[in-house]
Picture 1 (cartoon, rainbow, N blue to C red):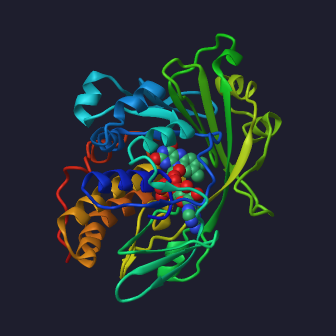
Picture 2: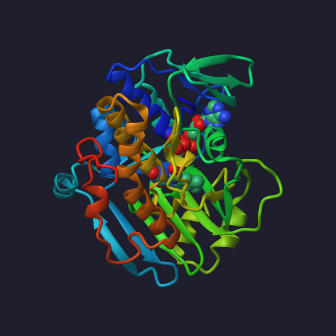
Picture 3: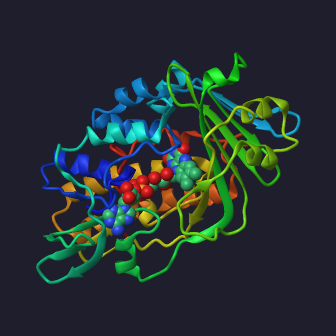
Length: 368
Ligand SMILES: Cc1cc2nc3c(=O)[nH]c(=O)nc-3n(C[C@H](O)[C@H](O)[C@H](O)COP(=O)(O)OP(=O)(O)OC[C@H]3O[C@@H](n4cnc5c(N)ncnc54)[C@H](O)[C@@H]3O)c2cc1C
């Protein structure tokens, strides 16, 4: 397994439970608590439940009680969904928000201790008739029966499978900030709000059940970045400039932001080839999508659940890959399309097909 991100950790946890010998190779020296939150909807929480991790996410993060879409200028509510016992019963799980660093710490508890090899940046693959060799920047090399490329948007495994093809900059960037709720000095905000402007939007939500930490992510048009850095410093002043003229309720929030950073956003054109030989891809490695539906991580985690089921069911990897792709590409493709459209929960939205889905029990789809 290459990459200890959201999808990689999840598939490792499932495969280890199914009796596979799994090693996870991660380029980073350790997990770090980078400044960002993540939304996990019911379809994801059902997967984490099977790994015994759902309650931990709920305890460390927050079960949001609502999501509200508001118009940037009038503040009018364009869409609202309340999350309560009835919605949990309907969707089969809660809607949770959590700090990404905290989510990683939870996912780490789902894998066998010692199975993640940090400081292992994959630089090459060499497939022979009997095995596939992984070569790392630190000089290490290991042979494996199969390789799961869960190495994100700049996937090296994808490059080996499909050739060099850098991801596409979408012309927008995300300003991200985390700050303590006390900074709002009593000004009350809902658990999760998305403010919709004509060419930009901003999402504000709590990340803890104590509601003591707030995350804001504002996505705006942005010239291409001159550096390759994953993020650059931004500022409260810059965020205020980007959202000038927006409703006073939002500006009250932006005015107290601290530690703002800006991240370029990349995706790829849809390509439904996710496997070949001893290699299979999941998550952003094969379908990075715009973060406008808050669903890229959800798709990686769903992929992990389905892929592990296919590997447990079919002895031949090629057969497992065929069932995995047949089961996943339709749902992922629709999520990619909606993410580009940026229409999810902007107005009346059928959420059932997305939230009610359970990748641990949904029928696997027979390949054509
Ligand atoms: C601004 C923004 C906001 C988002 N918000 C949400 C949200 O609210 N909800 C949601 O579901 N999704 C969200 N997403 C999408 C989500 O973050 C991604 O889709 C998700 O992280 C993909 O998971 P992954 O496991 O495929 O890859 P990643 O989580 O990116 O993990 C890839 C891992 O592989 C490692 N790696 C990379 N190359 C190598 C190599 N050569 N060798 C070894 N290791 C390597 C990386 O270090 C990393 O740990 C958001 C994305 C962005 C950009």
